[in-house]
Image 1: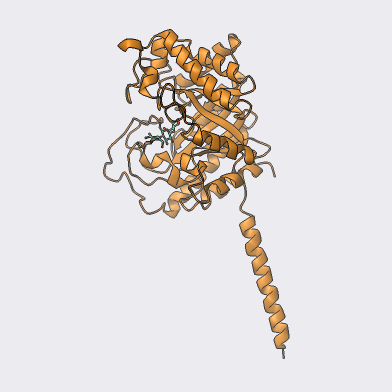
Image 2: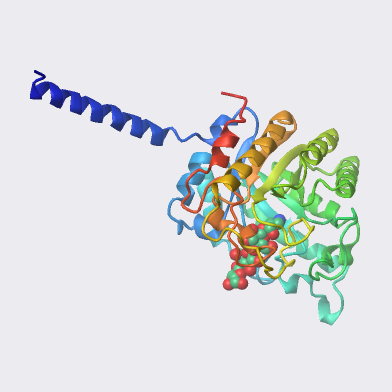
Length: 387
Ligand code: G3I
């Protein structure tokens, strides 16, 4: 007969094995930054609440999974320089300090943009339209102050954001709202405002990498225009290190062929390519529009918010397959791709919940609202070629 002693010993052993297994399972959640370490950096956008440590678990997850960070909002002109003689560096200081403490490649987003820029910056003197000299002086003061403050600490800057429209033309004119989005900096300064901004950013921190960032980056007209912009700057000896391809995509757009072509074409320019704001919406698009203009707001039609209480398993698998296919293309072009940054840590944080239709429940990232890995996470990990 088996003695109690034996049973107990067996029991203890069993608990031990289970415990160990459970321990190692928890410890074994893979890490995006580790599995892609030989291919490209993997980053995330941190919101101001997260940076302040006011969202339990977000920074821990970010430190575990990512080796690059971008501020979702706290370094934008309206947030960091709300008045001509007023700067607010509280959140951005915390952002950079946390990044340094966690060995992150720190990205600054964004210096010159028609959006999230306070009205005073675009206002002319004495009620007149903004003139070239005043506009250049304001951009210079802004860049000297913001880039100067983080000199040698922020490793790369999105210097100019979303300057080119879907027809491949430089935006110009008053800010406006979608679909008539203008660019007051161009209206005041002219075609060379981008060149001037890159020269100013380089002067403010000669070590920092400098990028041009945009959405709808796979549109042929934008590939042509952005390629001409980069080639033109390089021809003038203006430092530009890379192109930010935002990556605000869906389950069925852009096609894999369009993404493949995009990397091949931009890969000819001899600059770094970064996916800078990746998210893949799981929701029905209200129309054929793509892009990321925050002022494009569409009212909710029937069936526009199909998954208010969670993404069904078949949709989870559709998202996982989509992300796997996308990352297989990133792996194919890993010789050109420097970084892949997700536009948020988890689904609950994503701007896609309120765009273009406010108040929906979307699931565009790899971690759910409880910050647990989704099957899309496992699928992405599975595409990594380097062990
Ligand atoms: O900070 C103000 C706060 O003071 C005010 O009380 C509150 C209520 O209106 O608004 C807060 O500003 C919000 C800001 O996020 C900070 O939370 C703005 O309303 C809101 O529009 C802004 O949304 C951001 C959006 O850019 C603005 O364009 C999103 O979080 C951010 O994810 C999104 O990111 C952009 C990239 O920078 C560039 N590419 C496209 C991408 C998506 O639009």
